[in-house]
Image (tube, rainbow, N blue to C red):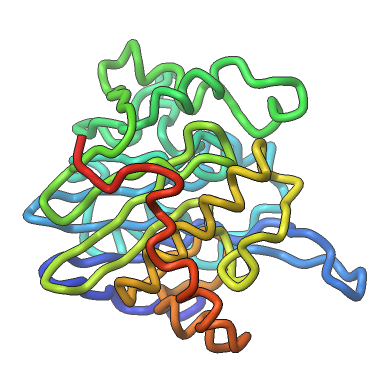
Length: 282
């Protein structure tokens, strides 16, 4: 098992990275196959426990033979840090791809689908819910309705439109492009900040080169603008970044940019969030 980092403090809030394993990634420049991390994040803010994404979960283990979990699952990481699924107050799905929402539900002993986090409200943007419920053929393989569709009947679904504040320290913000209803999570407390951006900023490359197009984005132009805006906000606030598909620790945005010498370029897009969406509360 890999030694995982301790939690980081963001003012009075605390954030844990919960690793869900590794899956095959794109081939590198040398043509060799690679693998990428699958990460979720737990935020404790003002006595509320907020889970940002859930990983693959356990329903699809037989259908994901290439998933390797040297550190166990998100649930294992939760328990390693002293928490149980019943303690989670809010689940934020950045979007509903299976590697982020597969753990939303589980099969109980009798075979029925139930919410993995039985006390939690699951926050999903309305645009994401609509898209995931009827995706086009090009994207349908990334969504599995048993992950999220039962949440409605189970009484756990909370659809939101636009920015949504969970606590005074934690704000969900639209981050469209990867999917139409993708959202990110900003944490601000005591003059410190963190950004948990899901697949809007999945890896180091997306931070260093936000204008590079990705075949995995439904709306590539919108996604590029979103990346610039998120990086601009992160640089303005000296934020920690939690990357969904790179590494098993949170890192400061300036440290990621410094490895490519692009800090000045990122500062030029500071404040660009206003081009994508409002900063305010819902």
